[in-house]
Image (cartoon, rainbow, N blue to C red; front, top):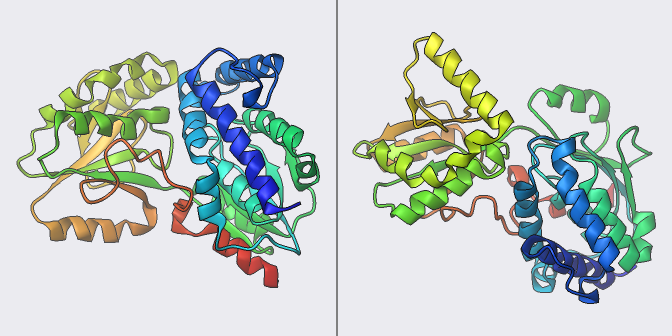
Length: 350
């Protein structure tokens, strides 16, 4: 198959995803599916919460909408334009995480757009959404059937592996896949840098970077760097519109647990009844809690970013990623800052 055929199939998927994210009603065959198929996809989206309590309909649609915007012909062509479609394809195993909906989609797309075959090991936390969209891709471009394998159990034979998981998973990945060419990804998180000049809207947008997917993604902000003079009341007021997160059972349980543990240990917290603020230079924070620390100079900011470079996925703030855009990376923004297409291109010589 040709790259142009593959791009056309993903462009059609983008149109379908956009339609699913903006309306409950089937708009016609321009979506690429029948009304019955559209209704089935809606049901699968609704049922994600049954399989994974974090995957609310709202969060699933946020992920689908983001991919719908990205899967445009120009985006796909510009992104992959400098890479040839492999004439000697390899089978790449992709071990997918399940922390947020479709979190492994970029790796899945990267393997296919490079002309390789993908064998995806689905997370038990996210094992029905991608297969539903793969069925659509195969319907539009039948040649993809032999290029895609999805499994929830044992992987078929493969030539190289991309694996994403927790820091605790790294040893497992090394033990089982270390002998193959590999790209391993571990935990990362994101930080926001405020300078005190932020508008009310910008702080509200920062709330998206914190609370989207309940803070479970590597692009979710878990640490704030604020100037010495910054009043935290501004932050609490700015993100108040996200207070409904406390009514989600899993998030609420994390909030209650963390509040109890830290208070029992006589550790000082700031609390607005749906998120906890703790002054700490620790980069990672538990679900429902944000760490913050104050700075006096730009040099202090730079030193902190350098110190935690290997653990930071995204930096939000003026001069960095715009507030509210942490969860909207372009196709050429890669997890762990490792260019997946470059890595796949290097495999051709192996």
